[in-house]
Length: 121
Ligand SMILES: COc1ccc(OC)c(-c2cc(C(C)=O)n3cccnc23)c1
Image (cartoon, rainbow, N blue to C red; front, side):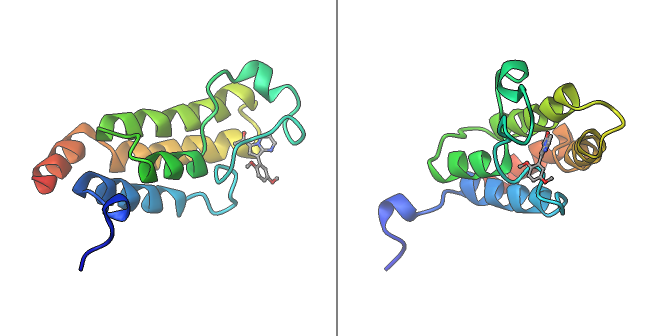
């Protein structure tokens, strides 16, 4: 007896869960774990129109909102870019976002995405 229907993870979801886990492991301080709020980041919601964080991405994977690897990839880069727009270059958040983005570029490189699709079948 397999997982009940709604819990069954599709090959794409399994791939996205894997990528999500690998990328989130790089965020050792948890700066990208949850949505940034205006209390810890004054004026954030006025400056960043499309917020994104790892918990929101996880929710989108589990609710089957990502139909392609590219949609997941663009949310990841949106998350990193937001941090490099709101925070000044000398801040720990900007530097953490830049480093995270570099990891994402390697893991989510187009040739890697193509081979993942081949693997998904
Ligand atoms: C200092 O501990 C935390 C804990 C969680 C955070 O975001 C979820 C952040 C955080 C994360 C960010 C980002 C990602 O821009 N940020 C910007 C300004 C002030 N704080 C933050 C910091």
